[in-house]
Length: 178
Image 1 (tube, rainbow, N blue to C red):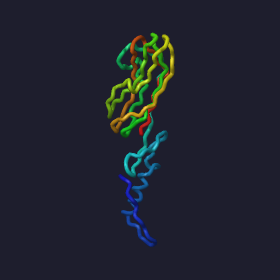
Image 2 (image 1 turned 60 degrees about the vertical axis):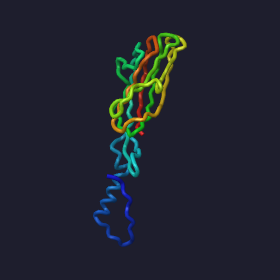
Image 3 (image 1 turned 90 degrees about the vertical axis):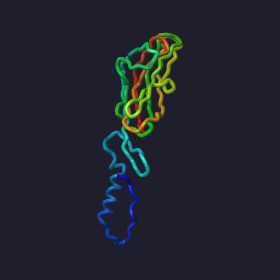
Image 4 (image 1 turned 180 degrees about the vertical axis):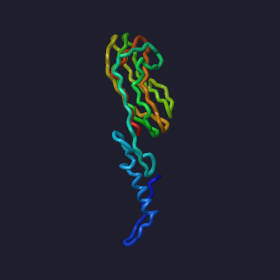
């Protein structure tokens, strides 16, 4: 139910059931009434309309490798933030420690989206380590805004290299629906 502008009352007015029900319905459109659990935040989802949004996150600490030059899952898929209910935007923060077996080769982490939105991992929205020397570790992070279809979306880290063997560890993703 949508919030409606309340009536203006004067001294001595007798409130009808419809007027009282309209006030009740407006209270049910406030942030405390929309808060369905801990850990979320309240966001607007229209004029005079609010909704609770819940961030999603995941961490994979396992060190794993790939030699694929196309984005793929590692042996331990993810990290992935599953079933994040979004409007049309989400801020995605992802991080990893990464290196490559060959000097000048790149190890790359991207993010794919599935669910209400289908989007492949993309080099334009990625973490990249071009190793100056073989096995030169860096820890990198990136935060970026994704435009998505409103609904339940899943965000999963994907991995690739330009050449050599890329190693990835201490991987994390956090999705904040806005």
